[in-house]
Image (cartoon, rainbow, N blue to C red; front, side, top):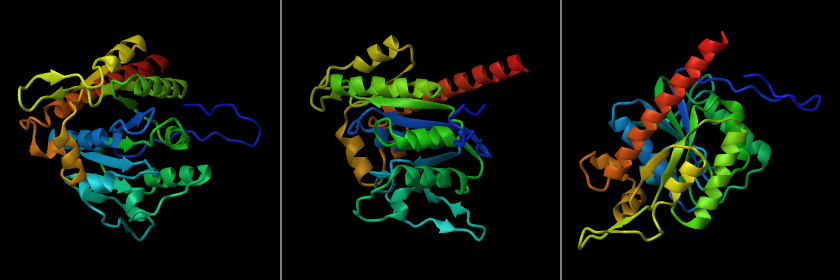
Length: 282
């Protein structure tokens, strides 16, 4: 990838691949409160359950909730040569700013600090061999997403939305940002899509379901499915035992595994079309 032309003296870094990491997938959203971290954590764990080697990078430096959801606040160990060993949780290799700043102290980061911590998490962490590195981005379209895109070549990005109009409007901004940055979009997923009534088993559309699918069509991106609004998904995340750990047959995990399978199919598609592109260029 060629460096972009910038004003003199300002060198745009060229993204460097992470050795041993096969695919890097960012999970982003236009706004907070859409359950992006819940989906990132459950996606990483579902992929691991499906037999893939998975790392999870909590890039949400403002609200690092990954440690809570995985039920761990262990401190990462620094090896002799300054490399950082990721924490192991439920079969995942995990790194989060929440491990470095335990407790409820708010983090106040400036742009350059954000850039350096993301670079460090990517470059100094000993990820080893991974099929997937899932990156949970902060909500919105700010510095962290840009740092990530400048530091490593992303395989693609997933945009999380709820069916509400406000969330969809912000999801469109996230799609536009990834497109401007020349990042492939794996697809869009609709979280809190519908509610299954525990008494009569009818699906109730609390937030007017289907908006994300329409938006995905409109923007010509893949639709990765709808995740039900399920109190158990939230409860299990809060207690450090995310829903997918109960396996594919658990009613609370079905929509999450279906989403993970669509992600795998789309990542394969993106990788094969980009390798065809390389062959044509040569």
